[in-house]
Image (tube, rainbow, N blue to C red; front, side):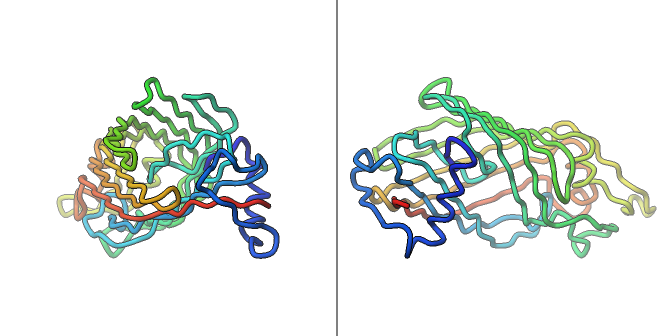
Length: 272
């Protein structure tokens, strides 16, 4: 979500909810000609094929929504499918920072998938800050520092770097590494078990923090028009350390995780 501050989002949400009575659509073919009070909304999402929980070898289909909101004159930042939702409070031509949050509805605690005693919440809400920096026009670096509010109450840092390639004006391709660091609380909430079988004996497993995963992400976007785009991504993650050793993963799961998604987005402008 691209805004200069959280307060600027509120009138946009109201306008979207009441668009048929309080807002009028604007022509987006010439965005530089839009009035300063207008809002540009990019709304879409991905159909996703992903593990039922992190570390599982059983996959399912899901949906990942995406929305970006900005005003004319604001820079249009490149959106990545697995970034936390972020709100710009300070930005320059190659840097932005502000609050971020992430809501996960993907369970990591499926008792029927492994012989353990479980009991954590499936819904995790985390909040914190993010910073994104472009040392070169085609290189993006990003860090997210998030602490759990519900479900998992630990602390995690998500690190990413991407190479951006635009072979043609309508094509955008990116590729780059990913890594996640976490404290003991975060690792324990996700990967510890109270009662796991090991060599015929039931013992607890206590996961500790550190580097939990490393991998890479490939993303592509094709702009059919100024308003309609198609998107896809493929994400590979290798769980490491205690995350890979956890009975959640080692007994009946897999340390290698793949996520793939394909989707579309529609961009429009409104005048509240």
